[in-house]
Image 1 (cartoon, rainbow, N blue to C red):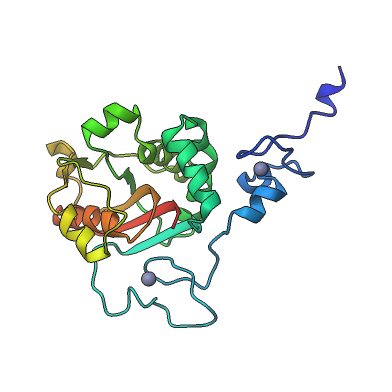
Image 2: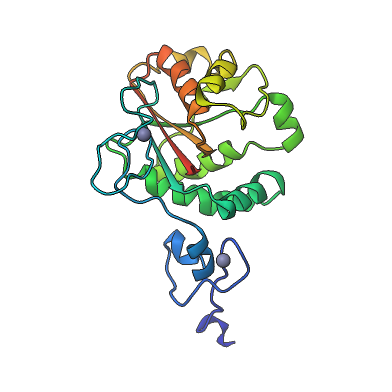
Length: 236
Ligand SMILES: [Zn+2]
Ligand SMILES: [Zn+2]
């Protein structure tokens, strides 16, 4: 009968330990001290474009973005892609822990909320239908649903994958960009395509590696005359 007065402390999103002393609604308050230490949050100063952390009061753009034109206007990521972040993403993506979409998506929404101006539409990096059939869900779409709800912006599927791509992990950014050419196409019906001009789009994905997938998606969207394309990922 006392449970209502003294509810058990909530458990951590990522492990089964108690999430700590404080009760609150913030998504990070449900991460235990141990997991917080293992997740390295990406904090300013950041590269204005790709969101990489910069040391000290350095230049506004990182070495990768300096002098490079691109279609992706801005990216923000929540944590560094270290071993622990990799473990969390793998649990979510390959081992059926779909409910992790909620905390990860909320953490990503917190980052996206800082973007000025806020994007108009939320979309996601699509999977090829054969991959979608194997996995059963698209992790980027699940995250995008949460982000869209928290930003109060519509979720609009704007892209489709028309060609499956080989694993990209051993390739450089330039090689990836070449390999990705022709992998995506606009997915929306004519009615939506007709409304895309001037819209600010946010693309959601789980991990930013070299940024080449998001760059290619941004290129396709800009061909449809959207005004700007930004992205948010959980890790990078
Ligand atoms: Zn934990
Ligand atoms: Zn950069």
